[in-house]
Image (cartoon, rainbow, N blue to C red):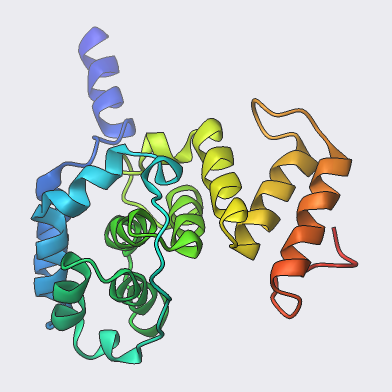
Length: 212
């Protein structure tokens, strides 16, 4: 009987994902993205972010964000610029993975890019990193626990809002509106944050004047 129970547990309980699983999946992707995925999976500049809170990584910068659609066509060049400290390239490459060239498990690779852009001073990237950690598609067992913790989520969105990211204000507002774990419901605080989102970006989806 004990053997049967153990056998059933082995069948029913999924094994935690390993680094080898991630690398095997990355190697199966088409070029040129394959090389980029493998570089991200092995480079400490990116892997270290998986155990860190985006809000704690943020450092203010005078650099301005620049949109660049070439990251979908030339991801390796974009990654090179990201590693040299260009926050826009980190952000644009992550966007390319999630929108232009969506990948089944892109969150494992997009999250470190957003986190690095956040560390380089892009407040919107901090928002995307926290949202990707919590809501993105992850292989079972690989979702970053630190970034998804309620305290980190609040810290990240608050830091982003303070530094001019309208979506950070919106997400922080939702936390106070809903009374997320560790936070009391505070409708007045939520409304103030929604108002700040509208002040920062009146035409953005983060400005939700009538639908709260």
